Length: 193
Image (cartoon, rainbow, N blue to C red; front, top):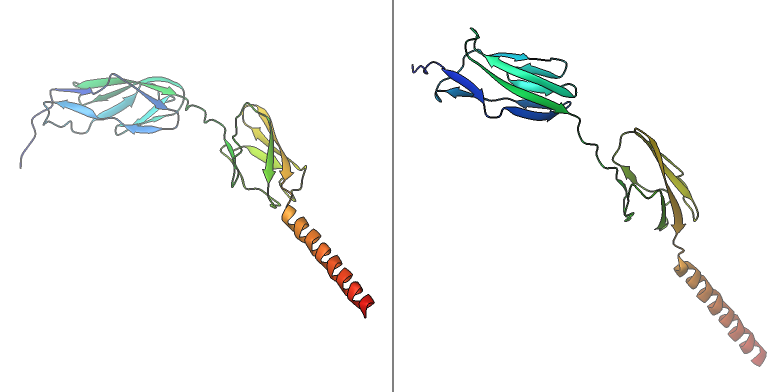
């Protein structure tokens, strides 16, 4: 069996690392000499309320900073890294409606949407806390409200305009005209006899 040489020194690639609350990452130790291996490393977090560390895997628990220390069992060889934990950036609000281009802008609160014959729309919101009202039995002039219940309550209003299907009216008018013309021709022919 080949044994690796004893570790003389250990370090981290970075002096500092930033992670988000709730995220985890593995820390890698750089051994010196390169072909050596630190057996049974001991991992410690300077503040376990901010960062938890288990076998080199760190998890951000709360916003703040903590120094992570790794050492050999005798604590004669150590390395440290400062871990900053920050909140994840808020995801930008987006509302979409399947089959329609709403051109949603969070700063605009009122929209007008022309729809076909749907009685209900498939509305997609990328937030967890929201309510949609008025999205049933849609007709011309229906009002749909979408209320986002995040840090503050925000309501968006969609005024529905239904596209009138003039084809049906056109066919009905043509049919009536044809029927009247047939009746006129029938009456005219009856008078000739």
